[in-house]
Amino acid sequence: MPTCQPDAVTRREIFKWCGKLTSHYPVGSWLRLACSYLKRLSSLQPGWDDPVSHEVVACCAEVIHRLQTDDPAQGVWSVPEDAQWSLWCDASDIAHGAVIQADSMIVEDGCWLRQKDDRRHINIAERDAVIKGLHLAMQWQVKELTLFTDSKTVAAWLQSVLGKVSCVRVSGLQQVLVQRRLQIITDLVAVTGLTVKVQWISSQQNKADQLTRVPSSWIRCGKTLLSRIAPSVTAAVVTVSPFSLDRVCAAQNADPKIVATRQQVIDGDPVTDPALVKVKSQLVVHDGMLCRSVKLPPNDAVVIPVIPSSLEPDVVRAAHVNCGHASWEGTWRFLRSKCYFPNMAANVSSFFVRHCLPCAAAFRRMPVALWWLMAQWSVVVIDTLELGVDQSGEYHCVLVCMDTFTKWVEVVLLCQHDAASVAEAFVGLCTRWGPPRVVRCDNGTEFINAVMSSLFDTFGVTVLNGAVRHPLLQGSVERFNRTLLTLIRKVLDEADDWRSELDVLLYFDRIHPHSVLKISPMRAMLGWEPSGVLLSATPGLGRTPSDLERQAARIRDFVEAELSSKDFVESEADNCLFAVGDAVLLRREVE
Image (cartoon, rainbow, N blue to C red; front, side, top):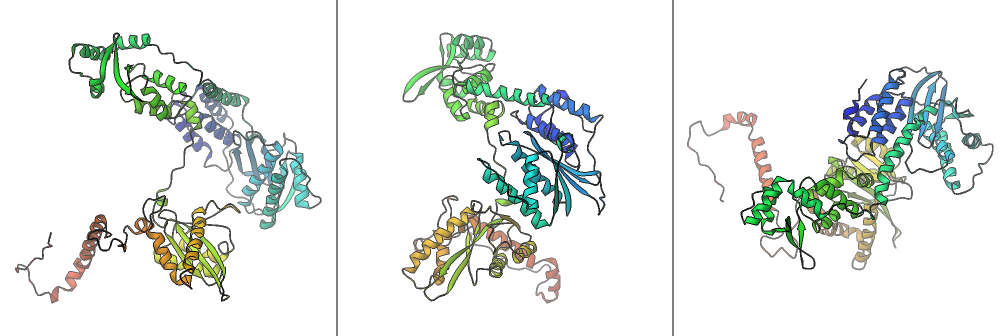
């Protein structure tokens, strides 16, 4: 069992320790929720490698003590095929829990923490626990089970919608939400052919109850940690800086470097402190205090004190609070007008990132992008655009494909708006550029079908489908559809057949600098841009970039080396007109 040393517990160590305890076991019981809640408590601390509070350490000690006598991590490797399956679901204001049982053996359990600001009714939470439990049971390919819940309201809802005995009557603000979620449960049961028998039990008999409960002392611990963050935010505007000039002067007298620099300024000698050399021309002594003379906007000459290293953390903290927990740049701009110390910007940024609890708690960290997402033709968004029927009665539809990294667009004419035509067009794109890693598309029937699924599996493509009536996932290609329609309307004024001008339209779109990339999609995709009509008469403009020329030279050298390999030379050795030691002419490239 992993050990947790109370004297060196950090947020990183707690996450690693909790992962070792529960992540590899199908059954975790109370330990699964305990580890999840411990990670939530440790997340209230600002840094990954900073020591956590003693309250969190005490919670870790409770888990270690309980594990000595009650280790719930277990599992069953073999489940009988004719087992009687049961699903136990429960919810609280902390988490949702579900337990899968085959005969009398618990084969798997799971718990999911609720959001901190989740204030929905407990009946809504119990219904969500049922949905999560059904998803857990489907992984075992269960065809018949008994569902146990300790909520009489949820049990009545499920018996009504699954048994089709009566309509569910719900009113209030949650009416639409409840009806939609109950419809999800009905669809899950209908699609999988699952037979569900719903039964109400008391909370004491519910085996999933311990997956939703933590000790009350842990809840008080979370409130204590939050209380340490909240007051500093409310009092940030009215806090007064505790630093006076007398305190700064006393700290300067206690700092040997400041004392030596002050004496050098008084005597007119060169400043020897490396940290203050770059501002030596601005250093002055005012009322026995080492200061810096600066100009502030609009054009005011002021004298600000030099802060010793012993006061730097406290000064930064006080300035950050007085600014109302502004960003590190705002704090730095405020602080530089009041005082000076070396490396001010770096110190303020470090404090903002690592030591300010309110800012660390409110800061939203963006997910790190995978390396293969930042490459050409890795993530592709596809969509179909119906152009209707023209005057001759011919139906027109196109497949629009956009590379999310380079904004390169491919448009393919489709014979029909069906899966076979889309599959044929997609195969043509894959043979031209290679299969992408990820394809993002909507839930249209031309994409969600057996033909396209088999095609994606063949090429090893991961498919991400957008939400219904929520096209933000494929927003880039939706925006290009509008641009394409605008271009086609412009072409129809000058040409009768827009299809013959489609390649020209795409060409101009590819050479036009994109507003996001600041370069053209052709440059981003291919690494070069063609010679434009306006630049063709000017020597040296519009040609291949020098870096691409160097790359082409390396490719030529590589190809020549491969063609003149050892096997090739030996196979043609008999037909060679030269012998070893003959004098030959060498070709030199003109510089």
